[in-house]
Image (cartoon, rainbow, N blue to C red; front, side, top):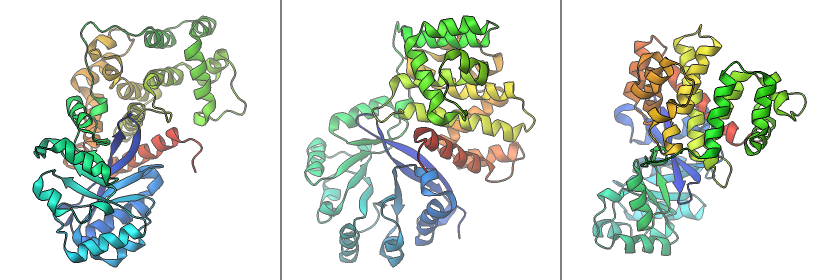
Length: 409
């Protein structure tokens, strides 16, 4: 049985709602055969768990022809996955019959790497009505009537997923063409605006954070919080949401400062900046992404430096939570850091990926890009056991899923 490394990449709809994940995997030369397809799904179901990897969402998983035609496919729970048929699979009579059977049983089917052109449209013409999704790379599709073909997909009840969308201009182009879902980290890219100014509400958060880090009295801090009603209400809701285990509900900022402490409160306060762009369902993909980054930064540091103290771990947290501030504010990160009381090491890590924290920050990005070679090299360089980083990444996914759905089992 091949050794499989798993990851996930977010898929968003046109309203920037997180709606599914692509299951990423790596396992050497056998990656596309029947055995590996089965192993990947087995890992999701039994080793990692669907809730840990996917939360409440489905995962697109690539399916080879051999796995598609094996009867074991009917034993896979249909509520967790979207079977993404590899584009190399020929639409023979046997394959079409299998797609008919799976569709009849309620499985969701997709075509992976669908290049919209005359040849592909002809190839899949007989199975379009069985498909729920087609995953397309817009930049590789050159059909003259590209937009019209997407309309045809919609007429068949098929959602079009724009694949490999890593830049904002790619998202804009795909959205204009009528794509429904978008896969990639385009939403984390900053749109730097000339003469951009800090919004007053977000600037208030930065001011409160700096006061927390300074040696000012609790009474003075409480007064400043109470001058910012919106922030105070959000903070009280957040503290009482289940993220902290207190015997009684907290009802005042003074109470929070007394029980929680300045550093933890400062961390959550910075995280709240991302809630200014929340989605309709609660937490924006950007907020979930930064939550995942903070989990990774802290836990990887603990693995590299087992004796790291709370202040050191706090620095790792702030590298993660500040890493996407340029996206939120629309200004250069260097300018944002000028308004914050942070250590030189945190600043060097964020701007230049220097020092231990900078190397961990680079690793976090490698995890997001599913760069398994870079991950294994980090483990070797820091004398970590194999799969330590993978285990940390899985625990971070679990934590993010719990953060998004605190009442879920």
